Image 1: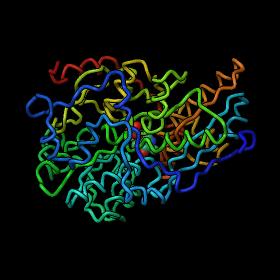
Image 2: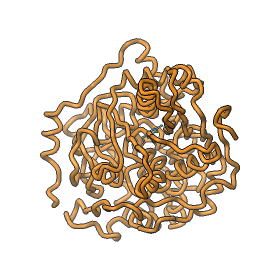
Image 3: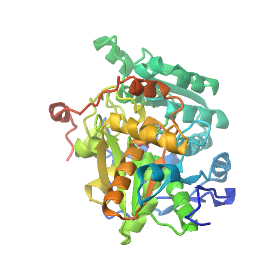
Image 4: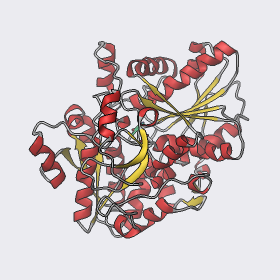
Length: 454
Ligand SMILES: *Cc1c(COP(=O)(O)O)cnc(C)c1O
């Protein structure tokens, strides 16, 4: 295969990775342990077992470099993995750049984003543990869609707390989940204590990811046959996503290519982790490579947050983690990249950022949609608004290459398609999108309510 003429690289089924890569094995500084929001002491595996199956807790703590992917999970992965790697020939031409731009496309499965890579193993391990039902939250709807499909496949019930504003704005996402048999509830709801407490204070609350997590965790913690599943942030979720980077590396090898720059958008951090961690391994071994996490200026956890212990959810029911955070009370402005609105970031991604192993950038949303449309017109795929953050950063780097004349190799993750997000495009085209900066003052205020853990 020649990089001169290639448009896409597709691997055969038997090239689906047999193991996930666990970056914890190679990190010079490991992330700090979780704390319990009940005892304010280090969280014990027993406490986590109230909401997660043993196998996933083991993965969460494991220092093993390679972790076997169960056959049943690989069988399911076959439906769309290995996912294609494309060269962005059209985009390169438009930008008139000497850079070679590649993207790994994770929108080729039934739910349209990378999230299914973790939904399937999470449903599988819960099924094996004898669990009957999974509860979860969803913001934009991608994670809820992925978990609904995975639960349906393994014969589990699925209860999804969907942030109310999305529930109302995105009926097709809701119907998607319902088609796979999920019970979808607008959050805050009156079904949980956490939800009722919010509604008492503010009956018109449109909800937030932090509130929806509180509701879903509460349901899991109070029902013995129910567990909780999270679509990002946690170590085991980042682990499952590494199939993305492992495949991409192989695909680039076939072209005799290796990236100078690896880029992915960052919400909770799992899709960034998925593409970049296999390259973090190389970087720690001395390879010269830049790894860039891209977030919205409206929710800039890495670039503007503090590195501290914080609650993962609004009602403080879940574990406390050391991470970059804007404070657990943070409710971001209504930007359209719903999947990038979490107040914190993965503890692993946070530690790597803190140690200067990875970089982070924040981009405003009108620039993001400008990049999304350029990409759609030249590559023929309408990207998810989240993924378009990575496209923006990739375009910026390619433009720099034009100025310096350097033929760098840029790899980014197209984490999903935007076919359920046309209303956001509509707002962009009609000039209704505005750029929001997160106010410094609000960060300072939020950060005062962080838990007191040293
Ligand atoms: C959820 C989502 C994201 C954000 O993912 P993280 O792994 O939490 O950073 C990015 N892109 C798409 C398409 C998503 O659905």
